[in-house]
Image 1 (cartoon, rainbow, N blue to C red):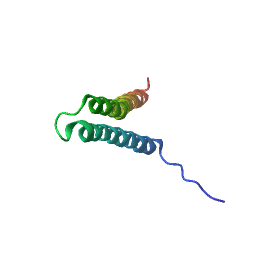
Image 2 (image 1 turned 180 degrees about the horizontal axis):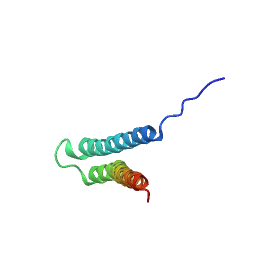
Image 3 (image 1 turned 135 degrees about the vertical axis):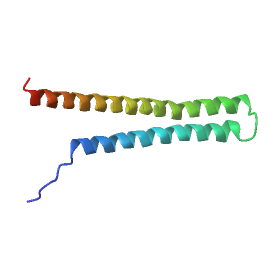
Image 4 (image 1 turned 60 degrees about the vertical axis):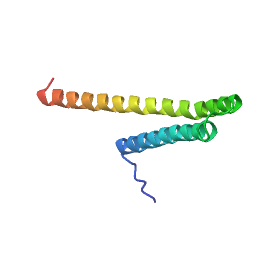
Length: 96
């Protein structure tokens, strides 16, 4: 019979958070690259090219910004959970 090793939830959470951050910054870089390739490479572009660059860059940048916000929120939540865990541990030691 196989014995499956269950990973520590904290380790899994950290790996997931790193993956979210990587995806966010990749999305932001892709949006900036698309904008540079279409609009910024050879000086002023035609209005149609600028509109296309803006739509594509926004489609890449907005999810990246949302993922950055999610990652920051998860960092804050983890810090609050850690603080709560410490306070509960101290209260248990004092017998409260």
